[in-house]
Amino acid sequence: MSAAVDAVAGTEIAPSRGRWIDDWRPEDPAFWAGTGAGVARRNLIFSIFAEHLGFSVWTIWSVFVLFMGPAYGVDPAGKFLLTALPAALGSIVRLPYTFAVARFGGRNWTVFSALLLLVPCLAAAVYLRPGTSYATLLVVACIAGFGGGNFASSMANINTFYPDRLKGWALGINAGGGNLGVAVVQLVGLAVLATAGATHPRLMLAVYVPLVVVAALCAYLFMDNLVQVRGDKRAMRDVLRDPHTTVMSILYIGTFGSFIGYSFAFGQVLQVQFRSQFATPINATYLTFLGPLVGSLIRPVGGWLADRVSGAKVTLWTFALMAAAAGLVLYASMAHSLPLFIAGFIALFFFGGVGNGSTYKMIPRIFWAKARRRIEAGEDFSYAERDARRLSGALIGIAGAVGAFGGVLINVAFRQSFLAVKSGDAAYVSFIAFYVLCFVLTWAVYLRPRGGEGVLTGARGGRYR
Image (tube, rainbow, N blue to C red; front, side, top):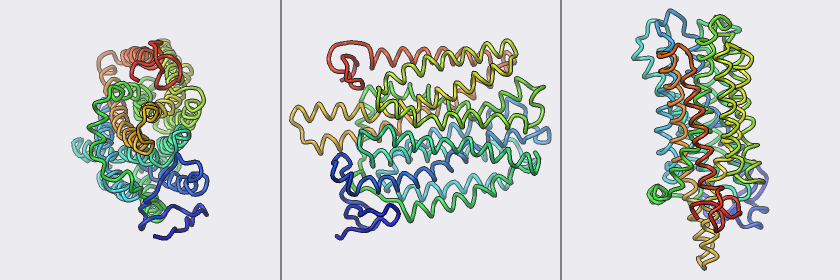
């Protein structure tokens, strides 16, 4: 096999068959400096592009519901359900999307999953109009959840390309670029509202359909598959036995679940709770993109901080600050203070974004710490390192799926709160309680001194070692 030339990065890539790379050793400094970094960077760039569009399609109904006036015959509770369903499907498909990378290859699955985004886009182009039955709208909104799966496969794929010391940065950049799709789709909605008015939501699809085709073509031309991660069918079974899986999934509900749940719900909450200030959709859209934008841009900082400080420490204080921010939102809601309400929500997005980066950094560090101890006990380095990589990818998929379900819970909590007490106050109380629980869980499992070496901090602490 002869080496191929990496036309994009300008470096020589490892020996490969077609777009399958046979030799991939990111933990080898010489390999990484000579060929690995350029190839990994190229795959990261086009992974972000496809994942970004996946997030946009996934959350597009958070914008569509703002266009849906009285002619659609859908009340506020019905609109919360329209945004909860794509969040639910997005969480469900994340597991098969994660393991599709090992089955079909990261490049191949990125092409397919990008093209699959055309289905919810074209369905919305046909059925999003007054007179369509509510049941049909629920189905069309639900299938937008396919876009939520792109995140899991993208993160599992990029996790395999980067060395442990750079995973926090790489996964943070990948996730942050994808998360930006939430803010961008809301800006596209704002542009449509400002130019064409509230009766033309389907114009948004004229932007996204061609971009989806371009993303699939770029993935086909410029991305790669890694032979070493193909066909591992035991990773799911093995990682489900690990107690870290439950803990990290709960923590990711608190960080990513908050980000995606608030992204779906923020505009509707503003319209319902502050009806006089947001009588028209465009008034709400001017503000709704700010939270997802802040949360997306700050996510790589969370990964960067975790690389340098400790993923567990950053996550711990993230939950403390999220509880405080939710408390501010509750106070503002009771006092009917719109400025404080918006400030509290922006803070929730900000700290949730930081926590998104730090929790994902914790996952590969857990298994790399375990691999290091096995190597010190005499196990072969390459086997232990490969095992850590496959288990990290599996847990990233599981935590991503469970975390995304947090978006469903948030929308359901808002729906029930508005139905029961005519405001979101009951939902805010439940959010505060959950963030406190996550704070205690992070400290008890990863930071409480127990003797022995902590798996995440290098200090004496950590329950699972």
